[in-house]
Image (cartoon, rainbow, N blue to C red; front, side, top):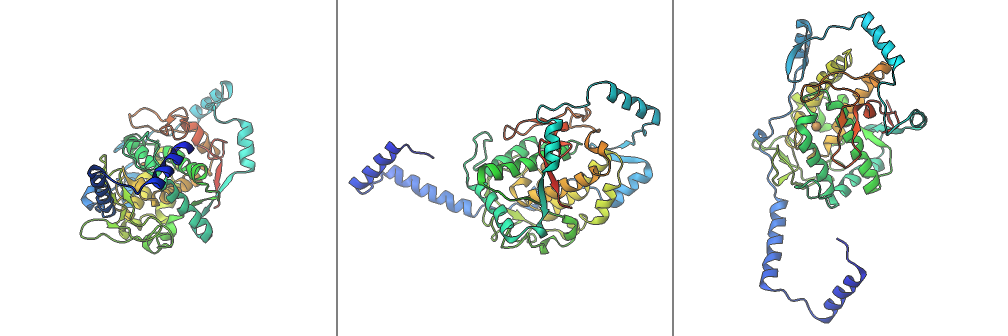
Length: 395
Ligand SMILES: [Cu+2]
C-alpha cells in the first residue's frame, strides 16, 4: 500500500500526540487477524486421495501400442495417421513456396530472429548453476510470493499465486491435448520474465536435467534446506508440509483441484514414479517422428511421472504450480522438447495434432496468458529462437 506524503505526516502527527487507543471492535479485529495468521501457519497438508495425480502411461504400454499400430493421443487410442506419401509432400512444398509464408507474427520478424540467434539468453543446468545463481533464483521466487497479487486472479493472495490461478483456470485447455508443450513453454518463459521485471532477477535462467536424478529425486541437492527444501515421503496418507528451505511453511490459497482453500506446500516423494523420468523413456519419446506422438509420449510419460513422483501439491495437476519445483520440472520438459525439435528444422516451423475441443492444432492456435504477457500464437512459441522468446539451452 502507498501513502501520500501528507497522509504519512498526518499519521506521524497522530502518533506523536497521543498513545494509540483501540475500540473494542478494533481490538477484536486484531485478535482475529492474529488467529488467522496462526491458522495459516498450520495450514493443512493435502490428503493424497485429494491429489489423484497426473495421467500417466508406462513405457511398456507405449511399446505395446507401437506393436498394435495405435498411438495415444487426446485421451484415447486412435489409429495411426497414414504417413504422407511423397506426392503430397511435394505438393505441400509447392503451396508453401507459392503462397505467403505459413505463419506471420506480429511479434517477430526475420531481423528479430537473426538478432536473437546471434545473442540468445542461455539456460544452464542446475549442476552448472553457482550457489549464488541458485540463491538468486529462490530469492526471486520468494520476492514474487511477497508481492501483492494483480487482483485479476481472484483467490490469488500474492503475485506468485496469480500464476497458480492462471494455470488452474486454463487447465482443461492446456493438458491432455497437443497444445500442452507450447502453452507450458510460454508459461515458463512468462515466469522467467516476471522474475526479471518484477523481482530484479538478472542471471541466466536454469533448467533441470531430471533424468540424472531418476529414481532418487530426494537426493538431488535442489531439494535441500539450502534451496527448494527437502523432498520427504508422505505422512499418514497425506503430503508432508515443507518446513525447511526457501519456501518453508508456505501457505497456498489456490487449489487443490478446482477449489481454493488454505493448505501447506507439501510433497510426498514416490521414487518408483520418478524412476520413469529416465534416459530410456526420454530416448524413446525422442525417437518419435511426429509431433503428436512425441507430445503424447512426453506428456503422459516423464512429465506425468515427475509430477506424481514429487507428489502432493505437484501431484495435483490443477494446483501444481503451488510448488516452485513445478518450474524446474517444466524446464526439463521444455528442454527435451527443444532437443526433439533440433533434429529437423521442420519441427520448429510446422505443427500438427489436435487441441482440447478436437480441432486441429495449427500455427495460428492462440496461446493465451491471461494478460500477464501478450497473447501469442503457437507459431510464435514453436521456435525458442524466433525473436519472441529468444533463449537456448546449454546442452
Ligand atoms: Cu500444467
